[in-house]
Image (tube, one colour):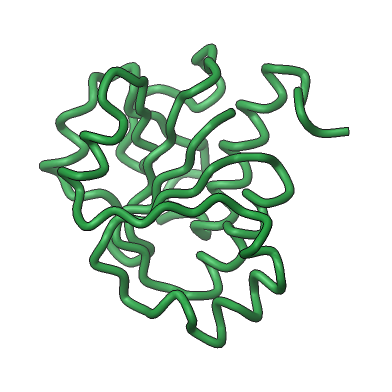
Length: 154
């Protein structure tokens, strides 16, 4: 099992799409406050349809609480400022993937806490700004699952 961490997510439909992805792939979702929306937001519920009840979602009061929750586990920061390509690592059960807010990405003070091999990026064309958050999460989740022969998926 893997974990996805959304640090201060801002756009409800992205979080709804990610909830749906997590429900269908067996990945746990962690949201780090402050959130820019309510978990009851209509747009988020619409994007996630009725998958919220099938997803495991944890809400952390702040980044420090989230880090404590994952103490002793491998965490990877997924960022346009990443050093290593996302497909260059061998992911292990229990790994967690951290994504920043849609409009600003992970703050440098958080990104710098990750070693180069744990700061990963999804390749894009030169001069591209970023991928949609829910698309980036899907790419990352399915690469980790692919490496484990999609262990829970059929």
